[in-house]
Amino acid sequence: MSRTAVALIILASFSLSIVVSHHAQAEAVFEPFAHQVSLHATGAGSYTVTGTLGGVSGEFLLDTGASMITVSREFFEAMAAQSKPKLARQVGARLASGRVRTVDVYELPTLELGSDCVVGPVEVAVMPRGGRNLLGMSALTQAAPFAVSASPPVLALSACSLSPAVAVR
Image 1 (cartoon, rainbow, N blue to C red):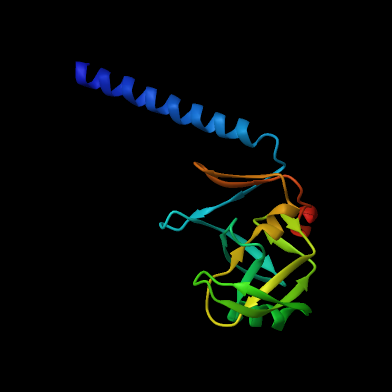
Image 2: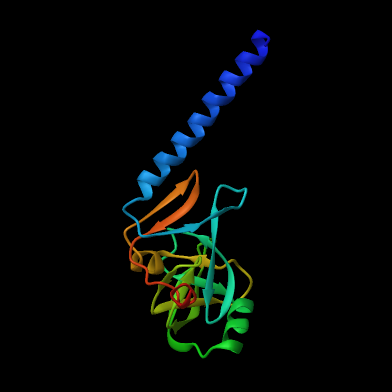
């Protein structure tokens, strides 16, 4: 075998041990957390998580700067067609532009994150026009303590109940 081939084999096995070691370190970090939900990188340095509200699934931007869960009017209308969200109140919401706008807040019994985390009841603010669905601190604190990892992209949560779909399996 040539020196180059031996060097490549050594380098490859070293790289593999780093990946395995990194994975083992990530597992050790998440060990105290009962639930792990995959995150999806947006390419803009933020992460989304798949969530289900009122029987409708969608992507929610993980936003620790948002105090509540917010959904677009379109998402809400799809959700309202399948469930009966209860109007809880109206609040003044400060938008990213700095403007304050009055929005309706609805109560729903649960929010499912990934395949094995359920929190609830949750309040959801409905944004009147466009916008992204946001997973804010009101939901994250229900599942606290929690941690966010960029590598691997995971939202680790402690206080979830099992999803009914998982409990049936």
